[in-house]
Image (cartoon, rainbow, N blue to C red; front, top):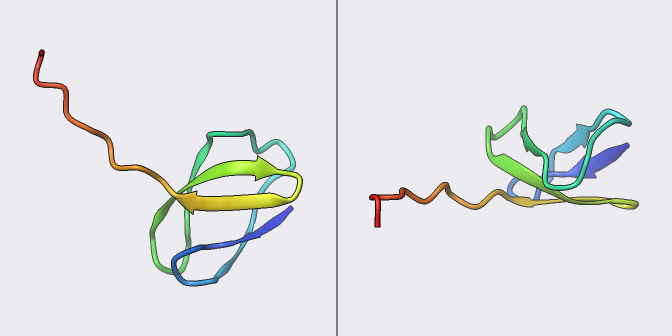
Length: 55
C-alpha cells in the first residue's frame, strides 16, 4: 500500500501488515507519521510525545 507524506508529498510504500496508529518515518524528510487509515492509506504528522512530569 502506498501513502503520501503530508509534509513533503514523498510516496511511502507501507507493508500490508501496517496497522492503524502505527508510526512510520518518511525516508525523504524524516518526519514521523501516524497511520490514520489503511483503506485508503492515509498518514498525518505524528503528535509530539508530551512529557509527564509526574503530575
